[in-house]
Length: 407
Ligand SMILES: Cc1ncc(COP(=O)(O)O)c(C=O)c1O
Image (cartoon, rainbow, N blue to C red; front, side, top):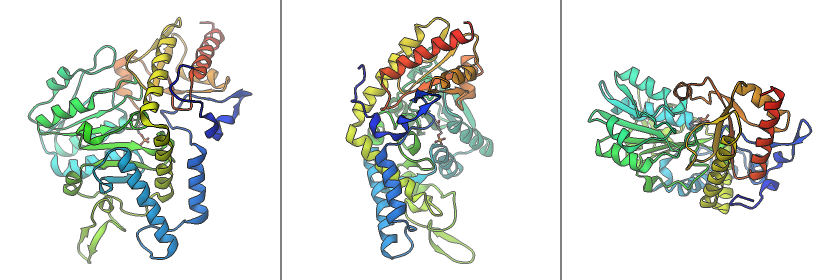
């Protein structure tokens, strides 16, 4: 066993499934992770015993439901080292969180001629909201050019930051290259220029300890479904002062302090940014996911994810006709690759026939595909229920695929 964790596959009922007569080998956790029984149980329990809307009624179920939601918020605040649960806003996921920052802070504080510095490895969710902000305001995007191995250097970051930079944004971990970006150092450079630092944590929060205070960042976005939680729930974390200064973007129930016919005032944080009924069960389920990860220990999860991603890179790069993208080390979570002469969708289909689930496509990172000079890639991604046995199966599956296409 090369991994840092004991075998926990028993906790994940879906991993008992057979696919085309083979044991399911799930290598698509960067798209969405599987869920442990404890998270599934919490969701069922909530709907069976507690279901009621939050923050409105004063009957027993409503009070229990509100308490459970706020407990989940508290756990998440601790998990990422927020200074207060008031800084934790529930959203539908990373995409909604990043769009909210661009609207709530961007529309108020970003103006004509201002600059956003970001990288070409960003997921579309951490690119298009900034493109749109720049278009709305007459601002500009500036790109941190990548090194040939798909990493960034602080010198290049410094080259792109100017006195017009208002926002610097980066994914902490790339969903294609597996690159682990130096967000704390970049945040320091951003602040020296008077800019804010926004981090896309979709692929980092599931895989490594997160300390927003140690990083010294201003906003963080992440998704529950990539870290053992339900779909449809995610988090926008922001420094309290910045959230206070920003304007809400979703208007309606529960986000107000007072409303008359002509105008309204806003509720305190976090309600100001949570207009409408939240995904209550989802948030409670995410709290259970955080409990599960915390019990295992994020430093162990981090070690496990890195060992698997680095091992996968080494094993795949050794195969004839296989190109693997991104740095060999350090990397985490994913290994994106191509087999010469075989389309990634065909690779994915032949692997699926052997029970192996990977993703093929542009991974919502088309500018990165252009930089790599490919249309798409195959991508295996790993999480705490994977082991070196799954990498063995992937390597064998790739050899079968090559033989199938006579490569
Ligand atoms: C780096 C990164 N950012 C953002 C997202 C978007 O996440 P969601 O679809 O959960 O909003 C993803 C999803 O794959 C991602 O990998």
